Image (tube, rainbow, N blue to C red; front, side):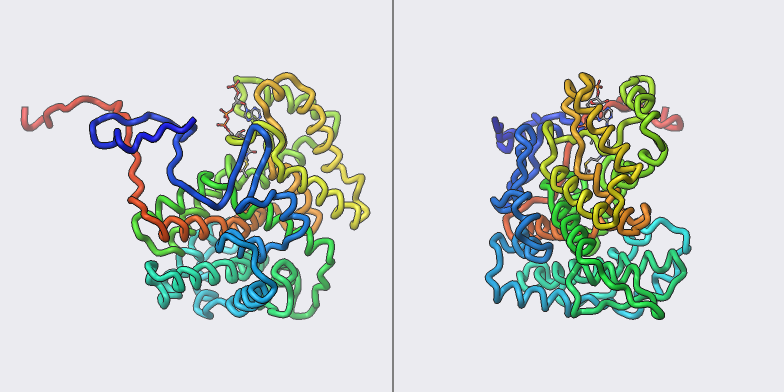
Length: 399
Ligand code: ACO
């Protein structure tokens, strides 16, 4: 049931809804979720079908424009994205100002915000063609910036983008090639990366997307809005969960320790939670987690790692949790992050980059929501509060 409270706004009545459990902040035609049924649709298409038949750039086009591209439109879009992968040379000097051991998400917040300083042309957000260029620049440059962060943390030379490669191949090339050694991209890895990008592309009004919309509602620069989204995604209750899952699996270390961790997760005096389980919206199996589990099996079998100890712990944990009344009663199922970390680790991506990859993938969702908001009528976002502080009192001098 939807109660439209717009008419109550000005007569002193407002809803108090911490965590926005029951508050819709906007209308949107981009993504549909039925958390009870485990359904996720982008522009009407089920996520599993997109993961099977589409690729990331096609999904980007769909999210941004509302329809799948024709073959000609796709070719033009892919070419345009490829043409914008380079970043302004001065951005590399900017990166050098950071510590090498800084968390890559800290650097990404700064770098993406700084795009607003380096790309000042085409910034009239009332013009659709300017908004399109901002979107294309973001999609194109995120992998370049992410891989550059990684190279910087390793104190290795930056690898420039290669435009003849696909989006995911190019990302893997920039991450793992060196000036002395070509990186031959394994097609199974490229496909798995592309799936990870698709499965994280959008998820309607989650914390980071809502942040991007809220920031954008003041008319702020789109690159600055996306930087706000990256900052929000960083937290362990949101995008940081895939990093936390792997840390947890490593801490568990052996199947014999699983019961102890399950007991900790159920103990209300212990703040520990089973990372990668539970979701604010899904109270059923996360449809993205199913695809991720299959992709995980494909990558590990390609590497001959089907008996990987972490995967064994993950599968056993999933099985125990699915049978345990605590998790059943609270409808706590594995979420998208539960398997993505194992896949990325197998590909050779360090845990510190996991959330960065989530941010890269989600950039299209953020910018599509920003674009949808700017295109339609919108108001500056301004939630109310329930004041619980001291009542009015006199400043001591004035008594
Ligand atoms: N392990 C153990 N217990 C849990 C877990 C968990 N992972 N998640 C929720 N619970 C319990 C809570 O303790 C609470 O129990 P109670 O009713 O006895 O008090 C109940 O389930 C409901 O939990 P809430 O915190 O109210 O659920 P909410 O919808 O606010 O939180 C969240 C959702 C943040 C995802 C939570 O499930 C969690 O912390 N999960 C682990 C972190 C994680 O995997 N995050 C990734 C989310 S997906 C994404 O961002 C892509």
